Every structure is written in structure tokens, then in C-alpha cells.
Amino acid sequence: MKSSNPQKTDQFDQIILSRLLADDFAQPQIKDFDFYKERAVSQIQTAIHGIYKSNNQHEFTIAIAQANAFIDAAINFEFIDLTEKAKWLDDVAKAMHAQLIEESA
Image (cartoon, rainbow, N blue to C red):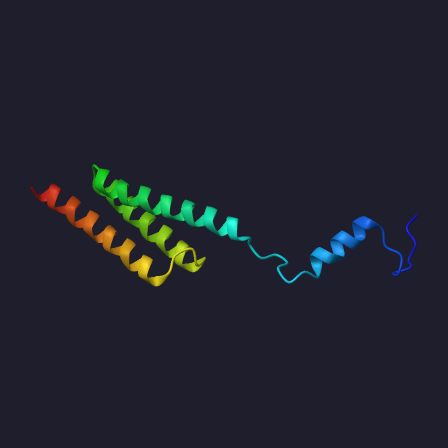
């Protein structure tokens, strides 16, 4: 049975306490940020590619919604900055314009 003496802690308790009281507790590590930024950029690129490849209005609308959602999520989670957001939105607009010109031709 564990004693109720707070002064006595075993090694496991010391590790747990040191992690709980650490300055970086529950903060993402640098390698995590890079991983998630790569994933976010990949999702945005895939959605923009989907705009170019859409064959009907439904696919076109879904691809635009996905691209905008992925861009918004990336900016909300701070994986991209406002400059990158503007670049991605410009890419979405170019893809939409190219697809609309193809449909009207």
C-alpha cells in the first residue's frame, strides 16, 4: 500500500512530477510542427489538384470547399502564416479560373 507521505516519492513519481512542472509541458516539439506543416501543405496541394481534375459541378464545389477548409485549418493551427495563406488562396483562384475556362470552352 502506498504511504500518504508526500516527501517519499519513487523514481516514477519523480519523473511524472518533473514532466508536469516542465516549462514545455503539453507543448508540441519542433519536429511535430514540421511534420504537421508538411501534412497541411500536402492536403492543400491535393485539394487544389482536385479542383483542376474535377469533372462535374459537385466535384468542383467539394474540391474548393476542401482547399478552403485545409487553408483555414492550417492558418488556425499556425502551420502557415498570412503570406502563405495568400499564396494558397491565389493558387485556389487560379485553379478555379482554369477549370471554369475549360468548362466554358
